[in-house]
Image (cartoon, rainbow, N blue to C red; front, side, top):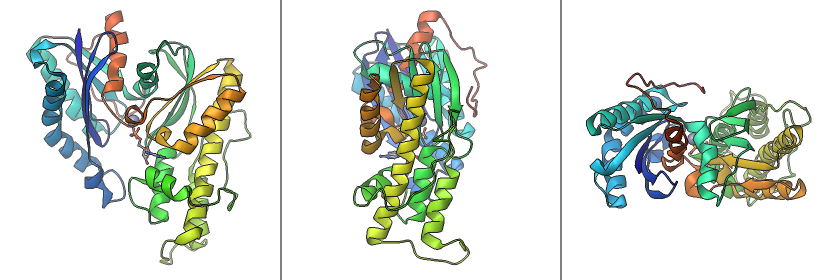
Length: 336
Ligand code: KG4
Ligand code: ZN
């Protein structure tokens, strides 16, 4: 049985074909990074319009690369929550249309649960029950995942997501958009101990996060507290030290919170997903922590960390349970 899945929740337009045995046959991602770069962040209306232009060509390519015809598809899946509502609506509308036209069932999939399921796709065997950490541009949250479809929120961010903090700090340091990869490259040149940046909630039993204070601390280190004065972004070793110290603070907090979640629940498996898990220093820190905790770490390969439609293979679990969506399926911007 072949599934076609669509992803349009933020700024990647993606389609993938996979089987009911979780074999990914094709996965196509069209990034909109260049469209948003000059604004320093994702502009929702531009994202929606780009999805509208790109989605049908991306679907065509996914079908073509799979070497099949649309008529071979037996089920349509779509990420319908959470995300930018105008962007989600493009994928949801297309998925409903395809399901109607082909006369096949429709399944709505939660994008955040899919980020964790990306680990299952990459793993040899089952990964559940586990602690799930999702760190992306829109989310930073820890879950107790009993199964792929039953996620209990343990805690999330009170303000910015970790990826958003990477993007904003990149803007402060004059490193461009998207910020994560640029900050990571700059951090490799600096001293992570140069600045003792705040680590909110680190030494607190609550599994919560907050990154806005850290972002402001980086801003004040660059400009002083009077940010009304236009100051050029730092350069050279000063910039590298700021990037390295910022990245070290984010990684420290994420790693400690995962350790606490493992200890508090007694679980011995950690599955992480979302764009920030593309960060090599974070991957190494989580690996080291899990080894010390005798826990198993699951991290998907890079192409499954950032937004894609293959991770919507979580739909297979819903299909097995007969959890289909009707024509009333809606785009839900907030996490369900
Ligand atoms: O999961 P994703 O592709 O989209 C959302 O659902 O948000 O995550 C995008 C986020 C961006 O904030 C980006 O800066 C961050 O992931 N990111 C990184 C790295 N690569 C992408 N953050 C840190 N280090 C990276 N190497
Ligand atoms: Zn995402």
